[in-house]
Amino acid sequence: MVIQKIRNTTKNQKTLLTIVVAILIFGLLGSYFIWQSPDFGTGISPEQLENQLAAYDESIAKAKEELAAKPDDYGILVNIASLYQAQGELLTEAERFNEVPTSYANVIEYYERALANKPAELNATAEADIYAKIANAHWVIGYSEGAEAAFDKALALDPTNWSVNYLHIMFVYATYGVDAAYDSAKVYQDLVKDDAELSKNADALVNQIQQVKDKQTQNQGEQGNQDNENVENNENNKGNDKNENQ
Image (cartoon, rainbow, N blue to C red; front, side, top):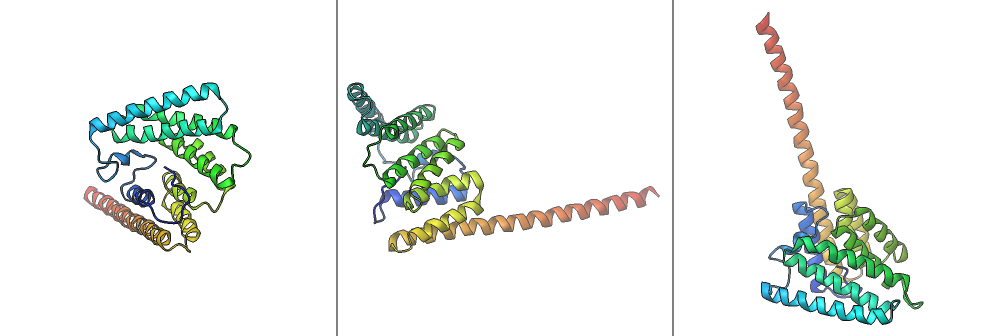
């Protein structure tokens, strides 16, 4: 989910921050199935979810009828991609995971078709946001190379787009680890430093990643000490065995 570039902290932004932290803490690498957590979602009943999914199917069908008459219409293509994205999120919430990849594959297809027919007035920020949504869809279905290529295009178009940089942090962590994620988070922190609410969120994120880095360093040190102790014990055992054999 790519949040729109607005200047106040919304529920979506706070949710994204929570997801980043959860991924860092629990190691849910490359997976958006965290959406099934009771802390996320709309809180509606299974029956309501099914009704909403049916409504999305109907809306998609109607939009495709419009597209048949105007196959290169940018607005219709974006609308269909957005509907598939919302459908994919609901399918995940409904734990119908076998259907999720199909929805997000359609997200990629229709956003790419939209960009192939983009209007001349489409600005770099809007185009970058679409590439970030494509990147997200690639990642959800497990294609990290496609995600990275789309993120690269998004950031090349609008390097200071804080919402793209924000979502990119999760991908970087999953792909390159906590050190790279820390660097990306620092970039995001600098981009939003003049916005009080966003800066507060960025500080929390950077601090959380730093804690993960520190914990990893501690664990590596403890593992190193354990390895040294094991080597020493093995050497002592060899010496004892030699003495007993003499």
